[in-house]
Image (cartoon, rainbow, N blue to C red; front, side):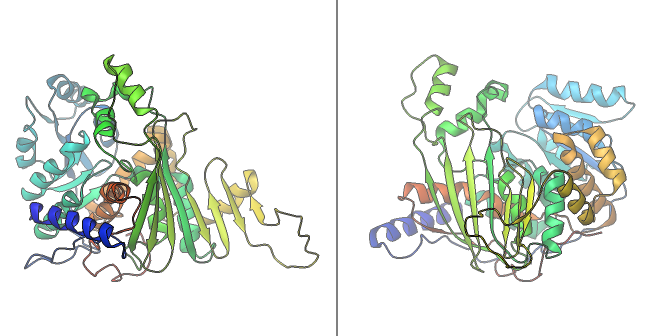
Length: 454
């Protein structure tokens, strides 16, 4: 199946480029016999979720500490290819009087963790290339999975995760923490209540200068990935929160995208500084821009830039028929002004703009239904990107405890992550539009509007 799918994509790209007609087509393989979609899937409740954390570097070790403070769960096992990392997390838990099993020694140590009967959920924080193999093995052994971002790098990875989740009836959640940041949670609730009218355009990004951080990644895997791969390699931080506001696969879906990038100006410099040798080949451009159009005629702008000294930003903008919300560089909400008397065409800022204290007062009226004052206070105390990591973990465990659908399902994972390969296909074909496959196989309109299970 893998080779056949790749062949179809390549052939479609060649045909489209040679004829100049329409977007490059991508294959949607038929759903395997006996499978059904996972829309609003709810598993049996797990009163005390046993978690196995795989990958104990920066993200994984932090996750172990956070999860030890989340009610309704316990860390039952930890795993890393590096024995000292596994030992450190094991010691952290032991010092708190918590029992866990440590697995380590080689790249397949995760298999024993996935087979451990004490583990209900495998929480995957490895380097990107190990996300999918661990997840597939875990679901194949009856475990729910939660995967750090980006959870998948190729279309085949996305389809493998979708098919395995459907076949095993196990949750496969993308750990997109930015969906739980405080501004995004409130703006989403405002969108759900119609404050902005109908959302027709959105913008998201990952603009983060990683120059000081490359060396922190195990075996320098992240810079190496940028050296070898072209496209938007990290789309989900910017894309996830705006997709929820646009009800993607909850009444709308991606249809096509087109991408454009700069040349790699800074990437080769970073690689040369690391190795001490000139770098003559570097795949990823410094800035990659992608435009997505949905079935309902709405648009999304997504940017990726980890190479320039631009200030950190995820952009996060919602543009509605009656209003606007934006987070970077200044948090503000703009609503259509009342009345049209005494219009001055030179007044370029007539919108009713809320910022500062006025914005706080407005947004206080639209607290997210999942964000109690107690949870917000606890999240800020525990931390993790200001608290959003803790809220993400809390919601995951809350839903598993109660047998509820998760906030983000395997189709969210596939739709947000497929942008990486689809952007590459567009770029390598002269910024030709590319179809986005329907990972729900027709179920994208089954539910109407994003909602939290409570």
